[in-house]
Image (tube, rainbow, N blue to C red; front, top):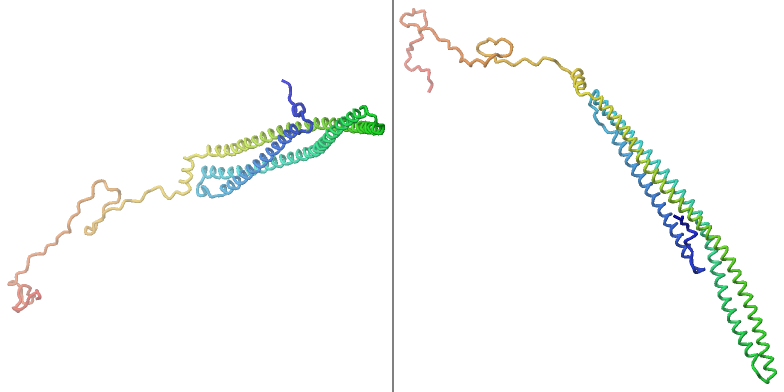
Length: 339
């Protein structure tokens, strides 16, 4: 398939028309807008990465597993450390994105300056072309009118008349009309020649401009494609870098031994290997304590306190006078019950 080029397909049948040129300029302006949009997108993504990096860095500084010990503590410390490393890598990614955006901005401005220079040259040529074309068209109209005036004057001079003075006058007008027609023809011819020169110069510059604009469009498309590719490579590399950090955390977790951590805690914080003795029942009245050691059966039934019985009452008739009398009271008004 034949390659298509700007210089072959953006012409117009009207010499003063700039439709093809304007279509190319519009295409380049839209491409410049695309570069600016991509530049803004990369700057915005860099800001997102920077904010994420700062938030992640702050998260890595938070207390996590401070009271843990042994292998799990080492794994949690590794987790926090690698979280910090991931945050720093995102910060570096943000900086790289800003650098790429800056390169795109410089590329866009460079193309803008080169395009502006060509546009100024072409605008001058378009004005000269339009001006010379108008002069040529006007001179053609003048030339055609002078030719018609000459023909009319010749016809009047060739008419039969007996008036000598009138004949001389008509002849003089015919001569003047001839001179005017010749002068108009000369001016018209010069304008056509000048227009041809302007047209040739414009054709050459139009071809050069088309080639330059096509080159710019190709560079822009290629540059945008490459910069997006680089942007995606940066994102992919960030994923790889983050996974490498996470893999180090996973390796640390593989060394986390549950049994070892339990044993470490026991050996570090142990308080004794014997439980307290059971609390035994002690009978208040018996004054005897059961033997120490865990009970072997159900506790003994609770017994009432022992009853201490008195001996027989003394016989009052057998008491001597020296003995105290307990059973009789002579006072008939005595009573142990008080009313």
